[in-house]
Image 1 (tube, rainbow, N blue to C red):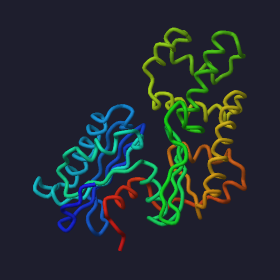
Image 2 (image 1 turned 90 degrees about the horizontal axis):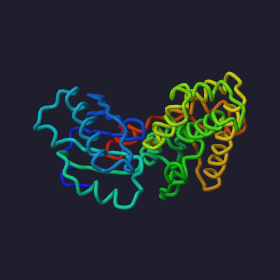
Image 3 (image 1 turned 30 degrees about the vertical axis):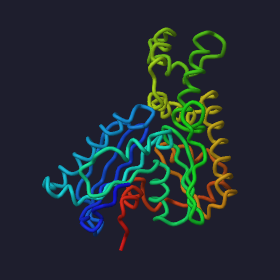
Length: 295
């Protein structure tokens, strides 16, 4: 974190750099939203040059829509939560980069999601999007559960749903398992040809697998046997995540991420009863990280 110009801060710029997209929001010291921006995915596993690229793209768009002059950029405090931030060397590399802002602060996407969900208070957030991870803040200690990267981790996530769907689809093409509407819908994207599916997998990123998650949910909700089993397995992983969160001392827990609203109905009622709505989103958390505090 660079902190030299905090006294000159007039604006706050927050980034949520995730595995599927990047969002930015610029506010003034009163919390009024002045501008916003967007860019593509920016997980550190895709390279730090790519992360820098989406930060610049989304940030420039937010600043442009706000109408800030070039000389005002030096009065902006920036905070960014980045997927894959825990990877070795990521923090040092990002903090060594030169940005035009008064201050910069970096953390994981889990940290900013948790800050946004509970207004900076103790609590936990379970992110269920392209990937999955839990972040806790308890008694001044901040730590993460899971989130080690796809495919080793990210249980219950969109990428995990997509991977399971691809496995089922290829087995169905082989004749090793019974085709279902889900498998047919997946293989249709590849002309029902195994070599085309394999070629796609050779270059596929987590976000590519996660692109199948809405399809899996659609067919599960329609009663497809395999889709239901995939979603039920994901729900069990999420249930265990939530149990662990409370076992580790979190006083409250919220769900976040694009898949959360669709997976929640598959959770047990007693689990859902323990959850609380998030007060804000990850970009709000990035603004807290940058130094903004509500009056």
